[in-house]
Image (cartoon, rainbow, N blue to C red; front, side):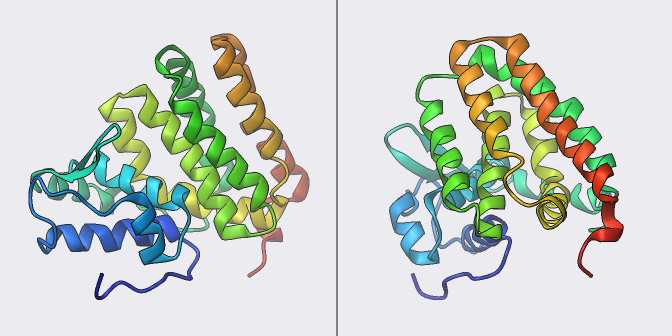
Length: 238
């Protein structure tokens, strides 16, 4: 597609989302028209399927597109986007927002999300969770790709729940969560989260709600403890 270049900066999902949204708002694809396949979009942007899937999820949350299982992604009416986007200025927090504050929020909301997800998750949902987990393991030495996979994992769990308020709030503060993830990776490295994501998938497969909630809570608590032990933001590279 003309005018789309391969992306090289950190927030790949955000940029793919922004590029696709721009194309949609300009009417490159009309209402009811099918977007290029995930494979085609991966080639266009030079990014992974996890990144493309995350960007499409953001577009779905705004009501710009809808994905039909096995049929592709199609353009919807463009009326919802302005209402949702208007909330963004109210939700912005500086990049150096205290990591503990962000993680305390995550501990509350993501424990609740996983508790709901265990009751609603479908067998086919595990394909994407396994794919994002594999991407985290594969990209453990590549910061941007690792963070994209980690964020996609948690965003997908919110989507599994299917609660429109949870999904929209999660997406509205995505930039805050992404910035916090960058700082956490700089401070603690990438290995701390991988074992917990494996445990979360396995507990979901077992359908054990209490176990899922306990693992998610411990996942966030372990990160909080590690940050406190490492001295917090003052030890981050400037």
